[in-house]
Amino acid sequence: MRTPFLAGNWKMHKTIDEAVAFANAVKGPLAEIEGVDKAVCASFVALPALSDVLADSEVMVGAQNMYWEEAGAYTGEVSPLMLKGVADLVIIGHSERRQYFGETDETVNKKLKAALAHGIKPIVAVGESLEQNEAGETESWVSGQVRAAFDGISAEQARGIVVAYEPIWAIGTGRAATPEQANQIIGEVVRATLAKLYGEDVAEDMVIQYGGSCKPSNIRELMSQPEIDGGLVGGASLDPESFIELVRGTAEVMEGMEE
Ligand code: PEP
Image 1 (spheres, helix red, strand yellow):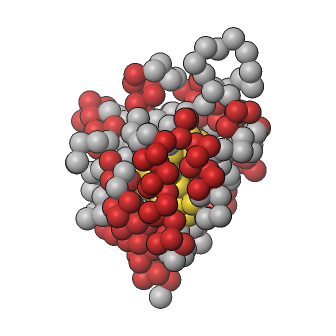
Image 2: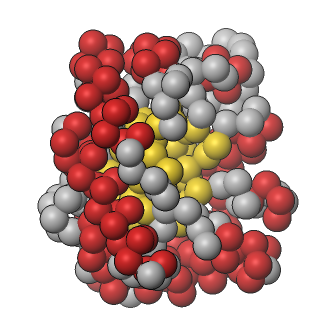
Image 3: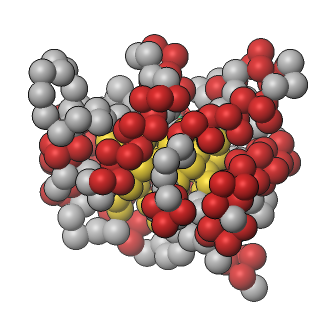
């Protein structure tokens, strides 16, 4: 059985002090919740302090982006070598990076390969816009993004990659996909595409999160769906109590499924 994975994406929120206060508030309560992998993805500047505070906990620390080269004349960029030791994982291809910062399928693929080469676990984000959704293009768009992201990546490497299906129209809008919609796209499009690339066994082992207006009030419904293996959560991950509640909700649903 796949272990569900709840990751907070703080986007451009929290100073270093605020990040440390959050980590101190959640690490005790989260240590008591088993059966769910947990992570917070913070701004680059908060990563060293955050990884210090969370070093003795099971909460992983993630970056929200990364360049693919190790070093060079790339002003403003952060390399995989720089992340080593302060980040366990990295979000690649978030729709906000694709929309505002020129991220393409090609750069996503390069960054994924660089993260794997440096032992940083990637969460690769895919998802369609509202226009694509309404035009019935979700399936072809999302499966195309998955194929492009995984181009040249082996089955063994693929097992270590987390995919986040995040319909753009659900991100930060308060309007989550219905649990059934999210389950269908994750199962019939994302996992099915991975199965075509790597075989059923590999695809069945891969963790696929849902992202888009996850909150404590809908997390149980979402996590009750068999194909949804956790969440990538923006707004509702900023408050410690809300984040703990998201992890608790996920754990409770998993316990219920095991019984
Ligand atoms: C995200 O940042 O990936 C996200 C899903 O945001 P929100 O939960 O705020 O919709």
